[in-house]
Image 1: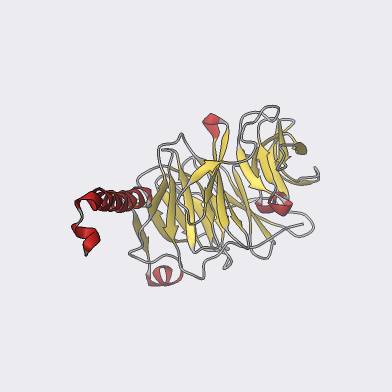
Image 2: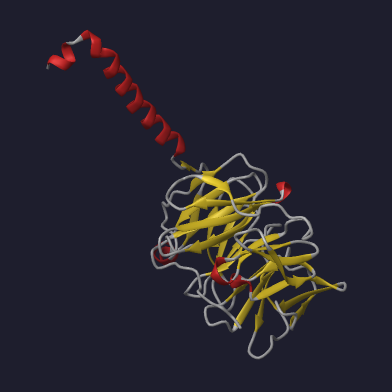
Length: 305
């Protein structure tokens, strides 16, 4: 007790107490905040299998320009999420578990043109697509052209690229081999777990193409109230996730029936299913949102070839 009673040491006690209070306030400030106005709608099976009825969405990032094109990367030691802030020609990385955001490697486009989408290829190489070509970016900043054309969408693993070539909207293998021609601009690509169905997001609809050696003509999979976002993902059970005007629609394959919706108070622009039991959503208002999903919900791990 001698230490406490000594007036000479009171300043140290006050300093320690202030430091502890500051640490608590800092943790509270950095902690993801609950998203106001979030709502989950579905039936009992949807609540049991996909998202709990009373799930709480969180705001991980706020205050940036319009965000898009989130990409989840799972590693043995850590996970992270890439996403684009297109107006600033910048790619950001949110590091799993830290709540911190920092600029990723080689964030500005030059010869590639305005940033349209972000993906990863082999060995998690960063892939950037723009209105002139698609490039891979090495850790040292070196770039290599992956696909020549005005790209607007790229598949998981960068096996397929979609965009405009010679005045026609196309989906191609990244080596340029044709897959399909489309009537509308493609905004996102995703494969079913067995790689036999390619889903293509356009402004007006989600299309489905049956693919074997080649892909059949596109059929409309879903087209109600999609809005202008480019979010599209498929989980391991074959359910399709698409951004809508005010949230996310979860759809059943193969008929495209609505299973449930996630409502947010911002305009969604993109989404990514993760291996950490969350769905990540980017918004036009510059926010990155995180929605908890059931443990069995994981991204369809497909590398189509």
